[in-house]
Length: 113
Image 1 (cartoon, one colour):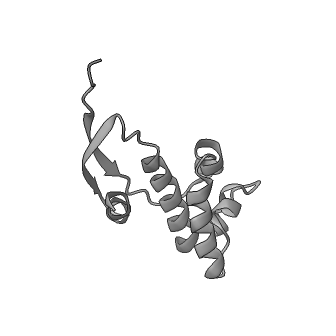
Image 2: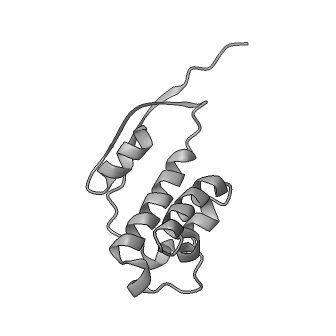
Image 3: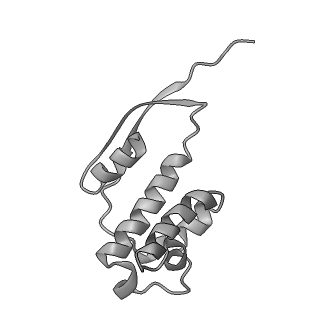
């Protein structure tokens, strides 16, 4: 059998400004299989006396006063983007670089390890 060479990939992390109405339910819809990762973020936020990202993401309705505040939006954006990164199949892709702009710089640091 011939071993397939991995494709090289550069990851560009988003400098997203906030978690908006269309993103409500994103974690539950696309990353329900990443419970351990999401639980780690939830535990930290609980220790800080904040609502969990799970609670915020699974809210029945989007409330700008709740979802777009800096502390909530940043955590939601971080959780969604890092969960997206964790979806990359490392058996198929060799990540050669990670970059980002704005908040993407912070996400790039987390993704790059």
